[in-house]
Every structure is written in structure tokens, then in C-alpha cells.
Length: 538
Image (cartoon, rainbow, N blue to C red; front, side, top):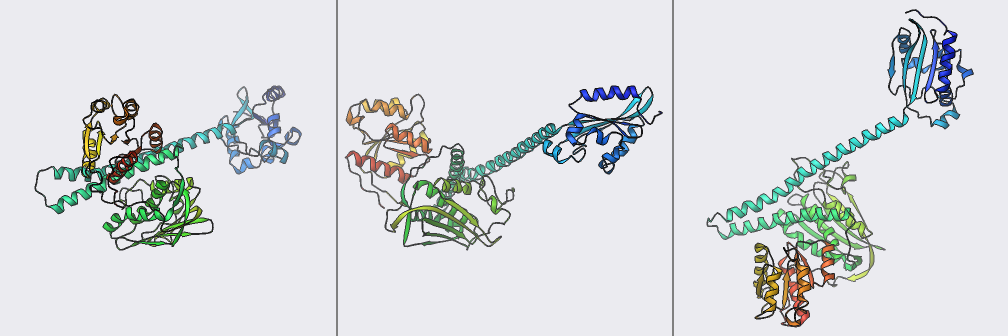
């Protein structure tokens, strides 16, 4: 194709009128010698360069960066009739003036098209169209960011579900395996039976902890955790946590050491939740400490805070993982070949619960194989002597319910049998009902009125709340004044609060500790006045 050195006047006039009417994009016109012949108002505004400053000057003199970026080749190709589309290539088309940079932020993203300008078959120059795509690029980046976030969340979900499946199936395998062995009708010695019971109990407890941690985290995330606060002795809670973790530590060969000050500061808090905090820290320390190692629980009173420390001689924490220790579902080794199980929720729960108590928790570790120390600080309320009441440890309660008549209402036969065996083993006389209607019939025509009622809440046709309302309409001796204890799988704090508001004398969550049920019955019957059961041993 031929080409001239200047634009024909009629083309120049037509193009300039079009350029003035097209304010939504930049339009740059050159002749065949790449001398600038058109520069519209959009370019003036975007670059701060007036028409008088650029018209008649060589393109690459005005915009030398075009040569540095290889655009001179594209203009050479345009003069041969080719079109070049440049996506986002004109970022900072020219270096704008200070005034223009302030006006446009100096961060404009642009897309461009360099095309030949022709008259008939002759190429008489070039036309460059420049579009502001800043918002489009930002939207694209935001969309890519959202996609990346969604993909990352999906990977985390998949990893979590895989870990959850593993953590549920592992203890379940032990429970079902030993249960099936015991049902095989072989003759087993006492040691084997005891071993089976220990394994089943330990793994069932592990599953309970797993479920409880997930539910607690869900409640915290939704803002549904409520603390039942009172002045409590953190030392007493620490001792209870040590007692609870000791069997696990002994089985693993980890030594437990306490370093409790003669006096400890009281804190305002929920005793159950604080016990959960200390137990989780001790459990974590024992888990990551090898046989022969040591876990030390310390407690001291500072000026206005109580400092609780849990230090172990275990495997330590890599410095790269320390900032993530308290994040949910985070584990230093998330692979399928990791040595230690768990969902990575225990320490996240510790942090959340401590902060709900207006406290703080920190972690320090010199590195791999050098142990770890967790420090919990809580606001102090004052000094308590070490003789203050403590959380009670488990103990035998043989015979404490001798002569006490109990009505047990439970629609699940297996669950009902556990309750009946628990209370009869300590002397109680039991009547059983599998539904609310059956229980009400027993109470309307009693041979002997029960002294206390233990009932499930979630039952078909009529639930525990319906039962409670119905018996309050019965005569006092066999209904209106009977203490009623809720024993239920609806075990969240809000479920407990609802049950107590409704008039239940006590609320016990399933699965339950036998001594917790026995103690609740003792308190309920003693409060009613007859018969007086023996006091459970301390």
C-alpha cells in the first residue's frame, strides 16, 4: 500500500470533528511520518498535555516510553495496514502532569487499539484509540480474588471433612471393634475385659470431646455462648483439670507437676468454661509430650491478674507456625501421616473462651524439640485461701440412694437401661416409662409415689416440657411438688437455661457422668425433705 507524509485536509477535518465528539476515550492521530495530527480532549485531561504542546511533534518525542515498550513496532505494522490490540498495555499512557495525576490518581489502567488510517487503498496515517478500563480491571481483580478465596475455602473444607471423617472413624473403630470382640461369646479373662472397657471408654470420650468442641466453636461463631459468672478459685479448677487429665498422662508415661501458689487470686468467670480452658491446655501438652516427659501447671497472682501457665518438655512449635497456633482447624502437620490426631479446635476454643473472660492467652516455644509454654492471664478479683471449696473430683457413691424411689422416663431403651443401672447400683428403687403418656398414667394411679423423676426431653408425641406442665396439674404428692431432673442430649448452655426456667430442678447433658446424675438426685430429694439419702463421699 502507498502512503503519504501528511493527512489530507478533508480527512483531518472529519477526524478532528469526530475526536471532539468522542470524549469517552482517547483518540490520537498521526500522519504517515508518525507526527501527531490529532489529540483529543480526553488525552488533554488524562495527561495534562495540551494540543498546542503536542500537535506537529513526532509521536515518539512526545511519548518516548512507547519506544521503550516496543510500541514503535506496532506503529510500523499499522502503517502496513495491520491492526494491533493491546489489552491493559497503556497503563500510564504518558507520565501525567502533577495536576493531571492528582485528578486521575496517577493509576489509570488503559486498553488500546493501534490501527491504520486509510484513504482508499493508501495508508495515510495511524489512529490510536485508548479506553479507560480502570474499573473493569479492578472488577476483574476482585472477581479473581473472590474466586481464589472460594477455591481456598473449598480446599479447607475438603481437608476439614477428610480430617473430621478420620477423627470420627478412628475412635469409632476401637469402640465397635472391642464391642464385637466381647459379643463373640468367647471366654475372656478379667484383664482382657478390663482392657476392652478402658479402650471403649477412652475412645467414646474422645468422640464426645470432638463433638463438643465443634458445637462450642459453632456457638462462639454465632455469638450464642453465655457465661454463668461467679467468683471462682482458679486454683481449684486447675486441680480438677489435673485430676481429669492424670489417667491419660499416666497411660502415656508423662509426669504431671503442679506449681500452685499458697494463695491464688479469685477470678470472675464461668467455672465450667474455665475448667475447659485448663483441661484443653493440659490435654494439648500431654498429647505433644513423649513418654518420660513432663507437663507443669503453674498458677500465681500478679498485681491485677491471675497468671496460669502450662509448660511441657514436648516437641515444641516451629517459629513459622507460632502465629497460627490459635487459628481454627490449623495444625502444624495437617498431612495424613501426622503423628497426632485432632481437628485443630482445642487451642482456638481456649483463645475464644479466655477472651470472653476479658483475659489473654499467649504461646512461646524455643523451637522443635524444646517444649512449649502457654500463658493465660485473667483479671483478678481478690485473694482466696487454698482451703476454698474446689471442684469435686469423681468418687464412688455406693448406697447413697438407698430407699429413694425414682421414675425414669426415656423412650430409647438402651439409654433408659443405662439410667436404671446407674441409680439401682446405688440403692434406688426404679419405675420406668417409655413415653410421657405412660409416665402420667403411672403417676395418676400410683402404688407408691416416686421421690424424684428423671426424664428425657426429646421424645415423640410429647416432650419433657409437656410432661412437666402436665404433672403440675396432678395432686401435690404425686405431681405438683415432685422434683424433676432433665437428662437430655439437648446439652447446650441455652438448653440448660431454658430447662431451668421451665421448672426442672436440674439439667444434665448426655452422655452423662454417673456421679453427676446421682449427685443431682441427692440434692433434689434432700431439698424436698424425704427420704434423706446418704451424702455422697467427697
